[in-house]
Figure 1 (spheres, helix red, strand yellow):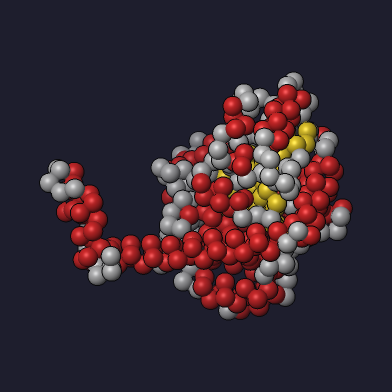
Figure 2 (cartoon, one colour):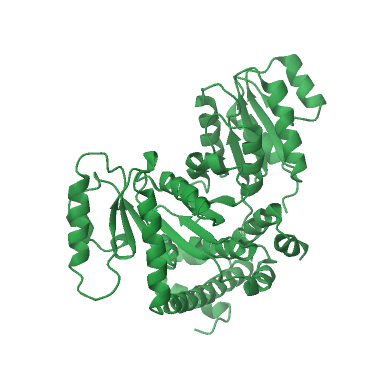
Length: 313
Length: 136
C-alpha cells in the first residue's frame, strides 16, 4: 500500500485519499487499518455535539485558533446529515472554519452520516485513526447531536463537549436522557442572548443532582462568534485531560472504547457478510410479497432466510 | 463488501462578488442527485479552494463566478489543483461567462465545462455522471 507510506511521509493528499477509502469501505480497508494501527493511539480526541444551529462549527473554529496558539496540530471531522431519501448531503460545517484552510497544521474533513451498514460511528472512528496515524496531536469530531450512532462517536472521545443555547427549551430538557449524559464539559453558546444565566443555572443544577464523586462537568458561557469564553473552554479541556490521566480513567475509557470498537466490528462483519450472501443467493421479493399479503409472518421469514444461506442461527 | 462510491463535489465562490444564490441552487440540486456537496461559502481564494478540494478529496470542483474575474481565477484554481496532484478533478464553472471567454477557458484546459445562466440543472448532473471517469 503505497498510499500508507506516503501518509507516513506526511502527505496530506495521502491522508485525504485514505479517509475516502475507509469511508467507502474499500476492499483494501482492512489492510490499511492494520498497517496504520501501530501508529495510532497518540492523539487526544475531543467530541463536540449539540443541536443544529447551536454554534458547534463556530466553536470549533475558535478552538482551532486556541489549539494552534498552544502548539498543537489538529484534525477535524465535521459530520452533517445525509438525506435518507436521496443519499445526498450538503456538508457545510467548513464555512465557519475556512480561515484555517491554509494552515498546514490543520486538516478538516467533512463527512455525511450516510447511514448504511455499520453506520457513521465506524467510518468516523476509522477516519480518526487515519488522522491519528498521520500524527495529529488533537482530533476534534463535530456531530449533530441526534441519533444513537452519533452519541456513540462522541461518547468514545476522551473529552466530550455538549453545546447548548439559551433558547434551547425549558429545564425538563436538561434531565432528558441522551446527550445531557455524555458531556464532560457543557458550553452555553450565544451567551450574549437573554436567558443564558438561567440556562447555565439549570444545567448546573441538573449536574449537581448526581452525587457520585469525581469530575463535575463545568458549565461555561461562551460567545463563539466573538471568541468570548473560548480560552476558558480550552483550559477546561486541558483540565479534564489531566483529570483523566491522573486518575487512571484515561486507560479505562480507552479500554471501554476498545470493547465497543470490537463489538461494532463484529456486528459490521456479520451484517455485511450476511447481506452479501442473501443478495447473491436469494431473491427477497417472494418473501416480502408473502409478508405483505400476510401469508407469512416476518419472524419466521427472517429465520427461513438465514437458514437458506446456511447461517448458523 | 464495499459500498457504492459517493460523488463528492466542492461548490465554492471565489472572488469578491457576493451573490451565492445560484451556487446554493446548484448545491441543492447535486445533493438531491445523491452527491455529497461540500459548500464553503463566499469570498474564497484560489488557494483555499484548492486546499479544501485536497482535504475533502473531491471528484468535482464547481466554481460560481459572477464578478468577471473568471479568466484569472479559473486558471489559477486549475494550476493549484495540478500542483497538488489533483489534475483529474473535474473543474466546472458557472456564472456570467461570455462565449469567447468560455472558449478560452476550455482551450487552456482550465475549465472542463462552463454553465451559463439558464442551464438546466439536469444538464449539470448528467455532465458530472458522464465525465467523472472511472472512480477508484
